[in-house]
Length: 145
Image (tube, rainbow, N blue to C red; front, side, top):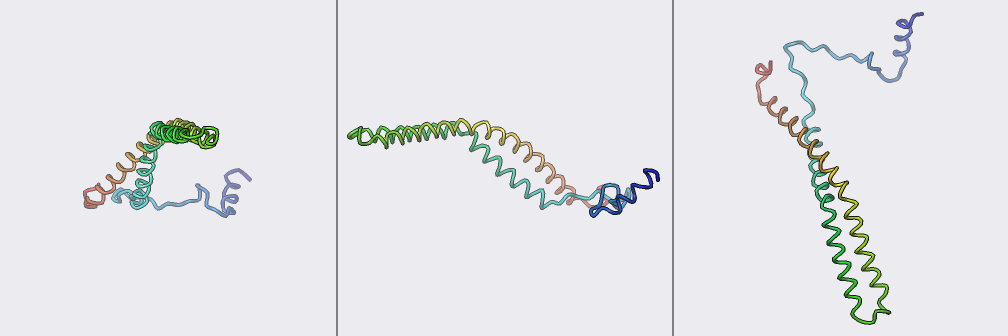
């Protein structure tokens, strides 16, 4: 048997349709192309807009770290008022909080900037697609040709 005769036997026994066995109805020139699912695009757009704001918050990480460092140093200096030997745990806790918040703030910045850039591109592309679908829905079917 040749390869051309074996391939139909193999693809017909598969439990899922292969790309060669999928049949799509041919589109006539009078039929407009199908529109993507508008609700699904709007949902993706909503998710990427939230990701954009999450990226903005993460990109401001050094500022959040600076705030945490200030609060940690305030706690440290507040613990130094009385007997320093008795409040050593509070002092080290304040310094620990200041250092960790600063490190997390600096580490979150590149992640936030990357998320911000990707989310902006995705949001703009999805917004253009949604606007095109809304324009296509507003036009009469005869005007789409």
